[in-house]
Length: 141
Image (tube, rainbow, N blue to C red; front, side, top):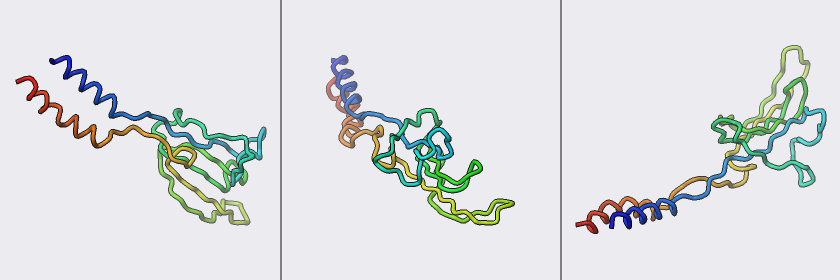
């Protein structure tokens, strides 16, 4: 009887979990001299770039697109981040610059800024697992 209860418990536990998938973001830098036009501000269907796994970034929860001045030039950078950098645009003037440059940061929290999967349990399974000790007690008396 106890092995049946354990088997039922394991079955409920297995059914309560959904598939897990890490975050995937577009990752590129427009200052890459070997493929400078791959990472434009606006990606098109003709671009040969796909979202890439963020497993190498600890605690990655966000995809970031930074458009503006960085690494000595003006361009676009897309990357994974564990920090929400927000959504904003501002004009920045670096020391020695005569002009102000627009810089924008966009943050989203799902695969390629499209829906992703996560681990979760359905409400029904949670209720059933919560009731399992009571059911076990009634069956074993």
